[in-house]
Image 1: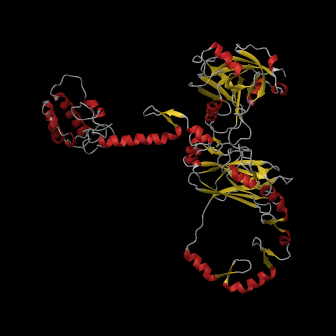
Image 2: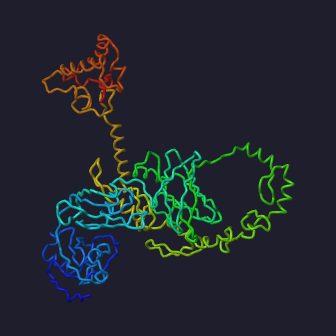
Image 3: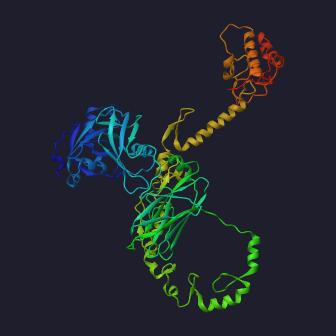
Length: 627
């Protein structure tokens, strides 16, 4: 590594040779670097403070690929440039360069981007890739350049999602993407709309017809993930895993996380190997409506990701079957319970209902051959293999058999820590860690209520407003973005859009309550100003003419013809709400004329400007077919 003062650079130069070092204070996937204060001095020597370009972009060239990026701060040590790891791997592909290699940093001014064509480098589909990339680009990127590999983490995946920049418009090596309308074109690996996918493949359907369960095999310590498709009419599902003799697995499920695991799940069954049947009861939650919209599922349907985790202590892996059925809550009436209580008695030893006629014989036999465990209440046969292998944990007194202690100790009594930001606590077990991961963990995946994609919720923010609204870091930052209101064009924070639109709705209600309505009884619009018939602009349009008509006689003639045509021939709209009243009435011509005459007479004062104010528009029974 060269000494900073030995590098060739001039204080007033817009290009400097600097030692590079990793700088991941804002994450490894950003493209904003840290430069020394001397670089800013060089820029201010050429540009005034008002002329200084924004954003400031630079080109960094080393032994690897030349990259374009933005600048986060001018706070680096003199002679050094801090580069996020994602860019540093492209600039300095060898370990020697990453630990202080020399790179050339040059100031460049880039054009605003208009179009970027990206290629997805991952086979697995993970959701709305366009929304995922736009969210990452908005929060972390300043520049896109041809040949760049953009990587960023995605909730529910253990490896980052990767995109390659194929081409740009304008046709140049790099473009600035700040404060510009950039169109994204995504090719390969599925398009912008992505359906369901899972890590291991396979689809599990809810089947209430008694069909054959799905047989699965999982290698020791591996996880097999299935997509459970729940139809709209199902409100709750029971998932059952039947283990073959000699094999064991844990059953977990999640509504967001694709790569479900022992610590990342929403439902789990960590029961001991001695329990051959694992069960999950899954009920519909508020998340499913958003999932249905994103994955284009039928209305009301939703997906659940079910994972079968084979016990790592087994050398042969796991074999078994899995099935899913609609949950049914059986309810017994009070009469049925009363009838059952009258015909049975409870055995004091095994606590089961016994018919009264067999009660004495049952109790004598049960007390002689069985005994009840004081710790868990299990009824065991005296001197049997089951009784000899019966076991209780010394720490939590959980029941099981002698072969269960290894898995039980690993899942419930092995201390572990979480990798989330700011959490230095030690959790007493994996089950406690899993509970933390699905509740207040900063890495917990949530369906953001604003950007509608699965993202880590982030740490608790210092804002009292965010805490009051129940918003974590991601939703708080996402909801603070401002967009223009389509009604009034004012800029409103996304989290306040709903309240802002309610203000418009309140204003609309007040406006409707105070407005003067159109004289047409079939219309609910506001009366247009200066309209001689008291109609709105829509209703008056077919009657308008620019011909000279001082007494409005021609206007009344057009109104008469329109009403006459409506009554005798109809308006031609089969769903017209005016039918049978003033449209296609079945009246003869003379009968129709008799109904039109009172309407025309009501408008008689139009002939005199002095008498026009006497017209009572509200009491004229005018019914034009409204469009």
